[in-house]
Image 1 (cartoon, helix red, strand yellow):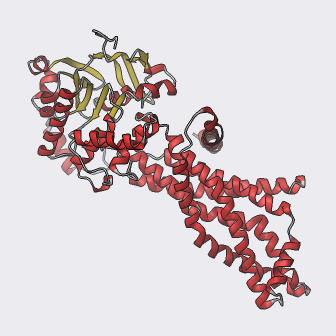
Image 2 (spheres, rainbow over the protein chains, first blue to last red):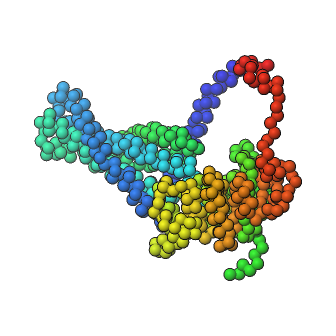
Image 3 (cartoon, rainbow over the protein chains, first blue to last red):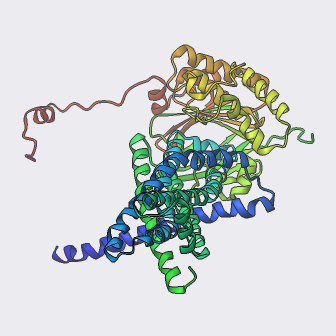
Length: 271
Length: 272
């Protein structure tokens, strides 16, 4: 009995690690299959279903513009206020523009956009596919000789890969504008001088690393949302569980990917 | 057409064993579905009939045995080859399983749009023909949520018929329907029998429907076939398990008066 209790904890750790690795393996498989269908399939004679991708793009991207605009604007303003709080003690308030620019374009633009997209679209993917699983619609697709991944996941994959970077650029612009509001209002900038300071602070690498991260975030969000949907069990409670799990897991993996690639860019001077 | 007198069965099942994890659901069953016949699979809850249907359409992979459809053992075939077979099969699921985000017309048109390169106008005409056949003419623009239970089933049948299948599968076609609507579905199945030379496999537990639409019937109980034969043979069967199912005899209740009193009056936690 005593030995069982001692080995119980390592057993749990081992089991959870294996389950986690299996989960990541499933995600990688789904990502690989979607990427194959989206990028290689058309050259092998498979359909691409552009209409479905377009429809998803509207839901994922265009309809998110209002909320992304507001949130990025506020975040830009918040960063400006927080950095100015410290910078003015050093008499360096004019660096607010630089701080906002670098923070938003390299980090917060992609990350906040990803989190908004998780809340809007990651949950929607899981709920949609989860409900279809419960109502046997996924089985119906298979019996109609239509592959569920090609029909349900690939259009979302393509739409997200296009829309999330676009939303990120838009979020970057609005974040800078948020900082601009502070700069013009409380730091003796003019609209033009603030934008010039922003432009001077940024290097192309800042923008490209931000966009690279946003593309990776898009991949993670799509794959987690769809995988959770496909692994939904029976019943409404299961759909709720898998939707919650999709959001929480997406947030965690997005931040993890963010950490890995930010460190990578830092260490290799690629970004 | 060189299939003159093709007497080979539409479906041939040999020693089929299917398990969910550790639990074996089907214990090595064998049967044939002849071309053009309507086979009704009867069984109680938990008998394995739904598992059997899912295996026949390729949604479950068996752990043993063979399922021969169109000269291919679908138990050991690639997904691509299975898809080719599926294009010649139609499945009507228990709840209809219509795609809720599309209209009825788009539901029926989906396999045509995906697997053929027909013109949109041709597809539209074919959709109208199929819907008219199931009695849903002019319902193309309705959403599935706007349909009643019986109409949903009919739409599901129309979608199963879209690619002119050789084998039709029905999972509990009258489940959840009132007797009048259920009779309508039976009528529909009989009409399809008359109109086409399709083989049909129907899983149900409704006896009245079964005797109306079947050519042959097969009873499954706890993963084994306990009877298979024509309607007349099954109706005249003297096997006690078959008779219990046909005569609607419930499982016998073993009354133990002492245990009953114990249950009513004893402590919850005491284990006497």
